[in-house]
Image (cartoon, rainbow, N blue to C red; front, top):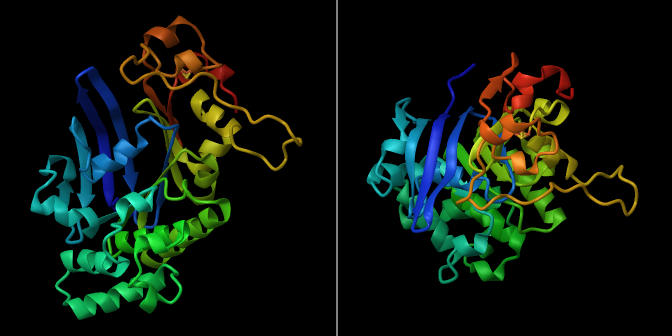
Length: 338
Ligand code: SF4
């Protein structure tokens, strides 16, 4: 198998708030290959967006990457630990956008209302290339066509507020891909969109990925989106990776009770009319009062006793590479549901 483009090893990003220490990401590790989609899933507050922001080194104060490695295989073959680079230095600015593109959930907050989408695209193109203004404008029109914006040579002079939510998200994708990055991070790219537009944007990301052999990190709270898009999945809870494996393993043989709860909360077309959707009991604890032992124990319907309240479970790796951090895997294998 080819070398991964990105290797994240024991990533830790903490926030040093006045009220105390928040371990927003506390030991995430995964590999990402060209052409692969890695889904990172969990409820809001589980650390998935902070993981994305850490890779791009755009974590806001009082947060910072405090440990681990983010190894990026550069275009020239060199391996760079992004975690060691100054976040506002020239090298990181060239990686951000140039080698790793980012699509956010809400394009309105990422696109300027004061500049045309064309000027924003031209600026991004020229930041990472030596194209002149005219050539960059032609490239901007090409990018708008590539993401399916109708009449791109006219739309290039539009402002973001003149576009629908779906078209704005297409512009965000064009911006993210303007410098031909090999990695795309899409953070809840469809959450703010209606179901039809959501399906169109996911199809667009899939097509662009196939055309460019892009490595994609897709961050979402939605297991339905994961099922449709991901090859491999990392499930996060309270900053910890609790399970990871292929999309088949996660959906057909989930090993962690939190993953099983997320799966039960997917709406099913087979459900009886008016039946209630299963929800995960309780809510995510406040990040400053993290439970001892297994962080999921106050909400876990499969808790096996005091060990869950006192001892953090270590990750168990199964022969197929599927891994989970739960005492069920080591204490009572016979009771693990298939
Ligand atoms: Fe539930 Fe215990 Fe497993 Fe945590 S370690 S998920 S509390 S069974």
